[in-house]
Length: 224
View 1 (cartoon, rainbow, N blue to C red):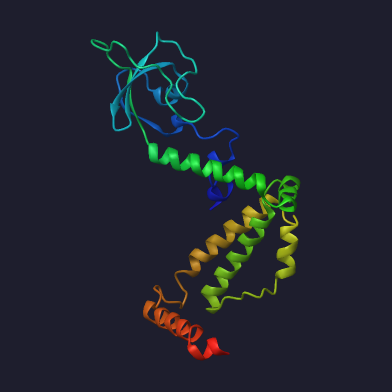
View 2 (view 1 turned 120 degrees about the vertical axis):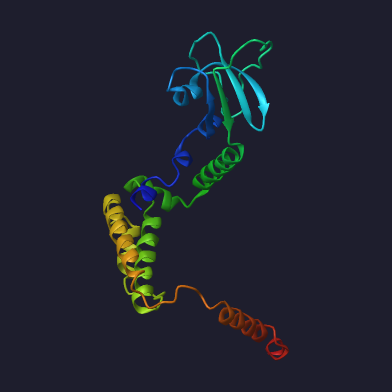
């Protein structure tokens, strides 16, 4: 819980979009070095596509410089013109789907951040975290405990005023994290003792849905 709250997606918070190098893994290492996983993103290579998002990389003269990846994640190392007789330094694979998803999420996040509610943005700048998210986190954790212990969801909140103070920065970020961690542990314990059924009654839910639809779309209701 602590890790997720502190770091839901580090790449979203970067000023620069995700780099393809973040999604590369070494398939074969033909060198004696054990540090190639860290060298690949910043090394100058000649690249030979092997298909399937795999590349054979040939280190250019042993030098280290930043010419492998552009800011969209497209490989810009020059193709190997004459690779016969050459042994590659590495064979790497790029997880293109994960990279594309991360890049899309990054664009969506910063578009949202640019166009978000001004008051909410000011609160985040003032207190160093999204206080509205913190308020809802506290509310949902409490409702989870209530559901597991009482079997009821209290939508109209008796603690509404306290929740509003959290939204306006009454709790520090550290307090939010500590509270969330404690409540998460409590919920995990309650899961073992709750009287709530493990699975939902899908037939009952489907029946209720059909009854509501029939009621909403009945001719008599439309006439009224």
